[in-house]
Image 1 (cartoon, chains in turn cyan, yellow, orange, green):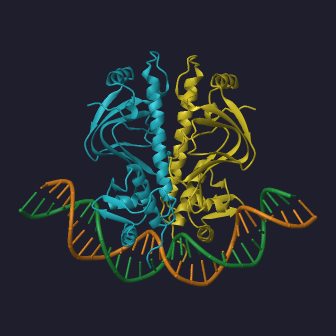
Image 2 (cartoon, chains in turn yellow, brown, cyan, purple):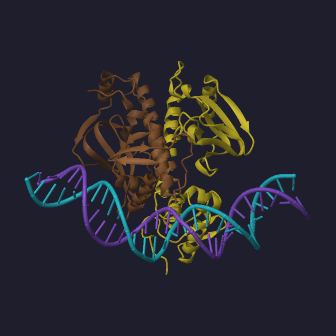
Length: 227
Length: 227
DNA sequence: ATAAAAATGTTGTATATGCAACAGATTTTT
DNA sequence: AAAAATCTGTTGCATATACAACATTTTTAT
């Protein structure tokens, strides 16, 4: 099985393997729920997620956690090209399920090696694109968080999710508890607002399947509650 | 006057000029408060801010605005390497003061030209770095917005600002009204919290000069109000 | 110098939100 | 299959917050 997305876009398995040898790269396996790395502890390595699922999590001083990124195979991570400032708080790369990670040196990525493999450009381009994508995700999260009320945050989030799935129904990528974290609101308060949205017939939630009944393009969704 | 920061890092004026000719690049001037471009209206161009100040602003359906980015000379912008999703909402690039912008084609940046100028790699590397930086800023904003209360948002923002200025005193980059927008909170509510923080002797604000009286590294700043 | 616009500072009020605490459902682990 | 852990759904309550409305100061434009 070989990936053709993310960092592997337009690069064949053959080319990738050659590059990895050229980069003196190595692979590593992690079981589920393992701390793969902690940012801040020196790391000029870039990880390429080949298989599994990774979350990048910030733990606040009070124990609260925020999901910063959600990685799938083909995604890259690493402090150097990280979208995370070397701030005070604890940032950890954690495996959500068993993972295979390929490591390369940051210098190998940005510097052109003497052999000047033609795929190197594609590789850099892909990396650029991935970082851009990451930033886009961050920006979307920002759009959600910049909503004032929980109701607006929910609607904004559901709108975006619906927009991405090209449908008015979609699967939540995580539990409602985690959604509350994602929206940075209190879970119980969020549940209350979800109930109101249901009562207003704006959404329906069955298990993790969400259906929205407002137009996701026109912003007419700022309707009042029925009271 | 020539810049040596941002996209110009490790590239001499001579090299930059040659590259710009090679790229068939052109320059443009904008007066203050001009809409330089609107995202969504096709744009494969990358802008390099040579002189002036630019803000990238999202206008919400209800007229509320959010500052997405704050650009200084040496920064780059453009939808292609933008950190902004091609979402529903209106995103505009606006000049805050008179600006000179150098335009290049995105394809020129990512594709290696036939002449294979050695500075091209540096240029790409710089672009990568700048996007990373942008993402870092977004992520910091995210850290601020993920705080639950206005008080925490303010403290988080001031901590970061203090952290960056390597001092417990720093200049606000914008007005308090704009700060409220940045924090995505109501201005009057923010003013109330600022007053409380002043009463608690945690901060002092004179004009745009902010001084913080809590340690910006240890998170002991979550102190109670005096009541 | 004057007018206009923007920013600051304040207050009252209805409501949304965080917090705590709980029971039941669901999932995961043993 | 039983036990443990997590998730869901709900409620009461104190308080933080959005919203509106206003006076005053400061900045910008003319």
